Image 1 (tube, rainbow over the protein chains, first blue to last red):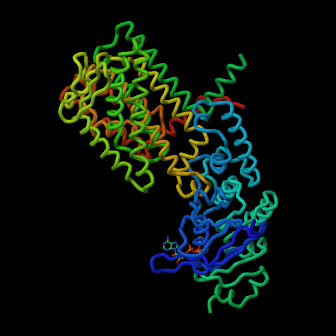
Image 2 (image 1 turned 135 degrees about the vertical axis):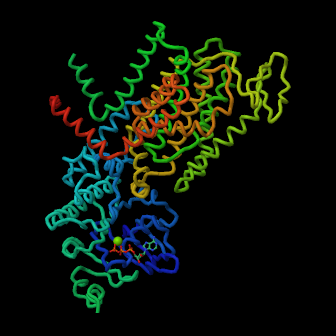
Image 3 (image 1 turned 120 degrees about the horizontal axis):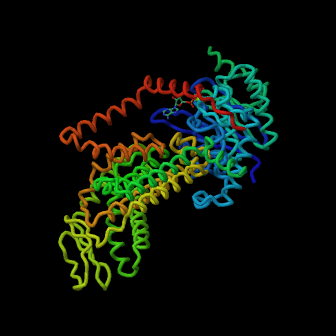
Length: 254
Length: 359
Ligand SMILES: Nc1ncnc2c1ncn2[C@@H]1O[C@H](COP(=O)(O)OP(=O)(O)OP(=O)(O)O)[C@@H](O)[C@H]1O
Ligand SMILES: [Mg+2]
């Protein structure tokens, strides 16, 4: 097995004539909380979309625990262990909070179509297990009190947390978070930082996150990659990134 | 005693209420109508409507599963019904050569009709459901037309040697003891009307059973996930195209069964009966009853079939009144202000009769 949970080699994508991302190399090790930052339009979300095969990369390779995912679909990528959240929240907003997490648990529920049509003992025992597991996950994100509410009726911050819970339900080894703190107030952001560390330890996973909130990035990430105009500007620790003149220039302009 | 109240509490809990109410309504309607038939207080016109109504209800339930839970539009319900009706007719004549009882023959015919329609569903679903957009509506519409045309030109006969098929002209060349079941444009001729009101009610209950048990399971949640957000569904490892196909085929099977029930409710029927208008009619039942609302579908289908009959007294004006009722219901149920007042009224009622808190 490879030492990297995620490794990309010269990953790139073009949209028509526009090269959105080029020569993107990243190495995420087991247990890392890794930050991907950069100005608006740098290509961060596009990287996530390539990693999860929402977009098909034009060039380069993606290795997950050493396995090339080049030919895999979004579904297979999830089954091999990558789960994600979305910058523009994509919950199943008409369904209940609990059902959203249970949909994340879909592949761990092991009863068949016939079991559900004929309501076998297996159906009932598995549904009970899924229910308990869903509440447990909701508990981590302090959402258990909202289990019966419609997902779409939750406040913004709670929706972001629910999306993380749903992603975590698929038992990933790598969690991709796209601006998890967007729209949260400072108190919520602080809580989120604690939760992110907590889930990394509890579930023994690696986390790659995109974030504009520098306090969060510098507070939780151990390594950072800075992206600018689709190119990697630098890799380094939070200290190195904060003091790098190129990065400061990219963010503040000349 | 305690166990019974506990069970009642469970079946009427928020989670199961829709399901319980839908079963109850069907059973109640059955009991009332059966009593009315026994006491002879039901006209013959209404009596002749019972089997078709049951069959339309099943087709509408199947369509509501597709539209309400999968979010895909199908304009070919009539086509699947036609497949069910014609395959069911042939099967019923075929099986009645070996089996004497009406009930087993009807059951076998319904199964054959359902499987045949399900296969057609798979055949068009596999290529089409991979595409994004409203292709399904267009393709199913075309399917309906093609099936109708094919059936209008089909000849099927049964004799002691087995089944004989021919196309466009009758070249079945059967033994003298043979029966020509399908006669092209003249339609299908079954020797015996096998469908009964009881069979219709049982088929409705069967459809409700399948739909509710499917929806309230991990598969049902996955189906709704595909409807609400395809990208999110695949990001958690749910195969959207597989679930789409599954629901489409289940819906086609149920519709085919409805078609068999319909066909075997007459001694003869024509392919031209299963035209585009029928598909639209079933779509109207579903939309009026509410997407995803099975009880609503049952009620709207029944009302929309009974109203035109009840309006026969107004003869010339009846279709006009019917259309006005349709438009009025659509406007009312889509008008935010009217719905708001209705809700206020409901809340007011709730305040007047406060429910004791469960738990
Ligand atoms: N489907 C697409 N078609 C064409 N261009 C696209 C597409 N998706 C992204 N892009 C372009 O790729 C570039 C990078 O976009 P991306 O959303 O990845 O930026 P980002 O770093 O996530 O920015 P933000 O911080 O605003 O979220 C942008 O110029 C964008 O217009
Ligand atoms: Mg982005």
